[in-house]
Length: 79
Image (tube, rainbow, N blue to C red):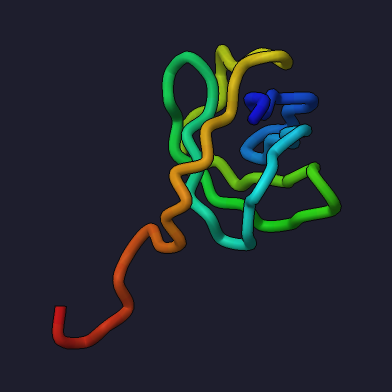
């Protein structure tokens, strides 16, 4: 499986191409800094990702790693 890579960065939104086996709301790690984000849109093997950290310093071509985890936080009242 090929690594997904950043193709575009617009503020807190990153577009990654060649992301295989991804699902909506998967948690991903982005770039050399390993920033945390969440897939908010999928079109084929292209994903739009909401990044929850400062994207300053990210560059197109950096790797995107899918953690295959689907939740950033629990919404369960008992947790």
